[in-house]
Amino acid sequence: MNKFKIVPISKVYAQKIRTRMTDDFGHEVIEKVAAGKGPCRVSLKPFKKGVDKRLLLTHSPFEIDNAFNQPGPVFINSDDVEEYTDIHRFPPEIKADKGSFPLSLIGYDADQQMIFAKLVGDADVDELIIEAFEQHTDIEYLHARNAEACCFICKIERV
Image (cartoon, rainbow, N blue to C red; front, side, top):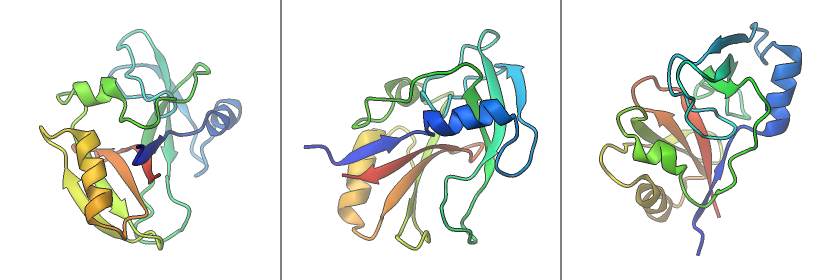
């Protein structure tokens, strides 16, 4: 039984950014060859350093403007890519590379108040997601973030 689903940045939103080359905060989108692994927030696949072109933009994964509305830098592929589709498990390439992708899970309630935070460390992120939803029924959704850079990776919803 599926307990959660991964929600990447949508392909439609990414196309809007690529067309305008301005983010929702009025910042110019910057295109560069990947200097790091990322990942792309649409496909949730790591970038190939020195090969892939990526766009840097400011993004907020929240719907409510409040104290927890954390806009920050994210990368998307400069080319059109497919959204992550294996939505009932955490992206395996990110999960497998704990050195490049140290993770934290942040939980929010229906009012977008932060009510849970956990460093993933050496634990299995899929198991921690299930555990968080089972033990904290007031968590509406989680965000996976880079535990070092604090940048948003993806949203995780209950199923």
